[in-house]
Image (cartoon, rainbow, N blue to C red; front, side, top):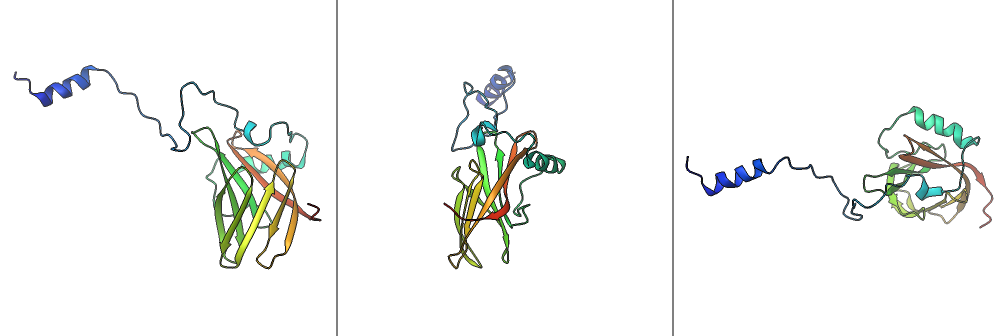
Length: 172
């Protein structure tokens, strides 16, 4: 049997053994074998306990819907919330979800929890300070509405959500 360059190359691949499948890696944060997998909840609010709080009841409600994808519409009766998902790149992707006269919208936000966005009704600015349990919204007319916030993990702590629970006086 005559061995050509092509057949030699194929044979060397076959004899080299199985090839490990590549893992998808997010471009912004490469994974290295030396990195330990941190508990996802630790990044957002270490030191905060939801046991026995109204959030623990919400956690049960959120868990009941399972590990579905984060959609565009908020679950909050106030028409706004923040939802986050732990990624395979070992960081949180955090989204502000909005619902109003223009329908539902979703915007990726930073860990700071603030987003200014323009939709059909005008420019809105929302900030959620989940560590302090407060948030605010500036509407297109310049009116500021403030909220108390609550939060919960669900889907085995791979997902997290924060939402307004009541309108409160704006003191900050």
